[in-house]
Length: 181
Image 1 (tube, helix red, strand yellow):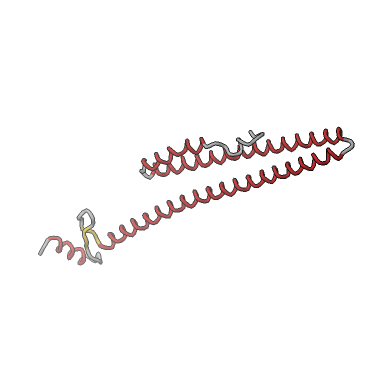
Image 2 (image 1 turned 90 degrees about the vertical axis):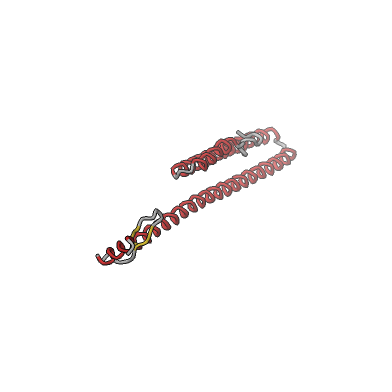
């Protein structure tokens, strides 16, 4: 009888149960051990896929939040500009109608300067928020690159790190407005 069958017979006769099967390296192992190893490999692959999917979902969530926040800031600035223009038009009409032109003009100029100052402060805050958001994105990209590097994917980490200076170099949308930062 062949030697490997005698090993199988010996194993079965000792009460080991199951049957022997060669693994990927050609070693004879109990089938239940091999199945457990394959099941563990499949479980780890599923876990890795879930981790990558979670990372992608997190990136999409932050991207959606950034887009929504930017839209809300833009809408608030447009509304403020509309109100300033409406106030300016009303002011111009009232100045023409007012007998006490000098007092009204002084008050309106003070109010206009206050509004301009408030607008400039809002633009400054928006520019700071944009810088902060870009820094957060750069930090997230660096974290993702570090994760790829720790998983042994240096080329993916390098691709991600190459994107970081581009994110930080984007022009600030709210810093370029008239009277802005």
